[in-house]
Length: 441
Ligand code: PLZ
Image (cartoon, rainbow, N blue to C red; front, side):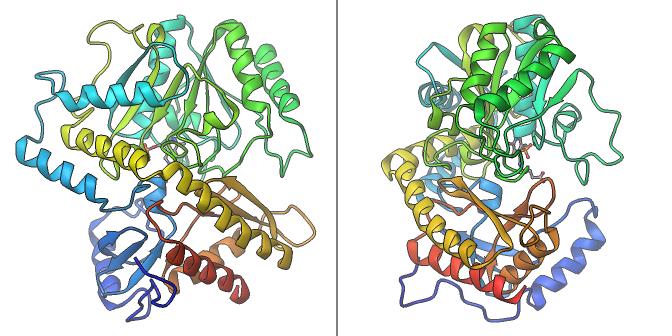
């Protein structure tokens, strides 16, 4: 924590410093090069809105480990809950001898996800694993096989989810053949689709599904309510509700991939809540368990219960440490008012970034909700993507001790995902550095 008088950042070496550079040399000799790193520093501790590296530098965190540490990286309730659980037992396998925290996480998800209908939940380890299970469940429920996804989608790196992810480089290049029966249709991307309204954009997608796939062949439509890796694309109002209507009319299971948007991140518990959309299934991960690996599929009881006993599972799914963490995360979000905090973060960030947009013609679009806000960078006067600028701005921010990430199909989006435990002073200082980075890039 810091106040306006004491800077949150503390840089005692250049970034990366000598210890991080030495570790990076070891990494490159020991770790497969396919595992990339965004910021070239090695972490030792992380609290509210800061990360301390092995050289003693304190960096401001505007990335939350890709939208995971919403409550902070060492949130007191999470640390206590996990410490208690690790002393009690680390694993029995819920499919062998079950334990209460798993049931309590399922109850919490059933309560918090959109809609008042009877629900059931199943727990897994990663976002991709949960997306795969949502598709499995939808296929059994409908007796159909086809899966619809949209342009710019990101759903993971496993075989089925690679097929569902849009971007080839780096996620899919050379990794095929991919799973079949996955069909991609256009989405709503207000900055790039010439002002198509939400209902028109939905009709463009569903017309294509009707003509090229056939609604009666579709098990599920899987969609991120706000796209994450694809560029923080917020669809035009009415797009998601129109898709939901079409799915209901045709018996297609609507799966909301809230892996990146869930758990207060967007200034609502779930991004679907902004437009009152009630999906049949909701996929969660990331922010759910404060950094411990946990994911979930939650949804309508009759859909979730389609696979028979033993049809779903996995050795580690709903690991007790991760469940203990998730219960502490939910308690923290509710007790600390983090949904409202995300809205405050939105106001603070948007004010600064809109001022930057007014002053800098390379900032084509500022968009997002809550603590999920991005800048799309372009060549001035056009919508031509400028990925080099995004890379340069991010690299300069990193050198100045601020963790920011890029994303987008064209690699030209700088995204902010601060932990909600960040203080206003830390956030403001991080934004100062980001804005200054535009002056040097
Ligand atoms: N669905 C919407 O954002 C993960 C990927 C980082 P896993 N996004 C970060 C990378 O380069 O691998 C994500 C997501 C959405 C699914 C996933 C997949 O979640 O926990 O990474 O499998």
